[in-house]
Length: 357
Ligand SMILES: [Zn+2]
Image 1: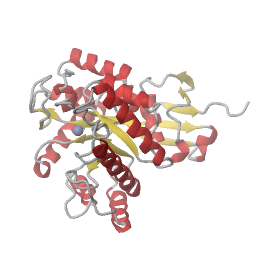
Image 2: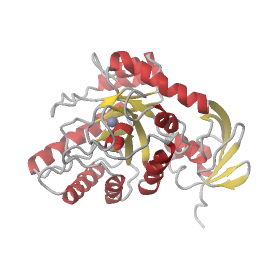
Image 3: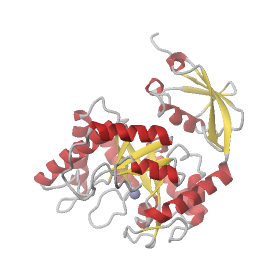
């Protein structure tokens, strides 16, 4: 969302057009230097966040940052700038900073991936204890840019030992122009089955829903309004109702934000609600998770899975840390796997592994 006049305006502007998830820049994306963030600004942002009830916020890093740059000076500058991105996000309470994976320029993709992993591990060590994480965005693969294949992104995740503060942001326009077709049922299934097996849906933290002005495999990154581009409406309907991805907040980066974001967001929401309008499930929590609550009722999209509920809970409160990874789950008192689909009125129980013994 545009943030002119103050970063909190991204939230109030988003609320005004019915958004529940908002992405902002925390600094000018075309500059290296930003004045340090004032505590007053952070307070105002957090107040607006509370007031608007926006469910999710993420930040996008500066376009100048290249954490895989072969030039030592640019690399160092990028690392310092990204550190400040993480610091600003932490001050604002923003859980993810979305970043492009950089470009290999004069080096090779392999060398660049190694360098990127080194940068990320360094940043993760430096900011140990912080909550703000790094979400690697799938890219269009223009020029020497990294991040155009799921395999390459998986290599970087491995290179960071699958750190919990490393996630993925999937951009539909980028994957499409990078060569991943999603236009019909078969190609959609092929692409997202591959995403699931190569990267894993648990790593998916954010979706950028953008249609594409340029054709499949063109490697040209031009965003189009939802349904008006080369990708088309059926893919977006599948995406916003896909049980494997319901946990991931969706943001649009389509043109003409001031006038058209409302229209694009509305298109996506309608499709999501028509096919998976909300239903209620009961959740019971055991072991140390019951410090948060013994029982609660959750409104979830129809078609939501056990994993959706676990990820939603994990993002709510630090006391629920690990509920998505280390728990046994039971649906209506029967042990269940995390991909099981839930139905209205189901009772779900999360049981942590035995401690001690
Ligand atoms: Zn994007």
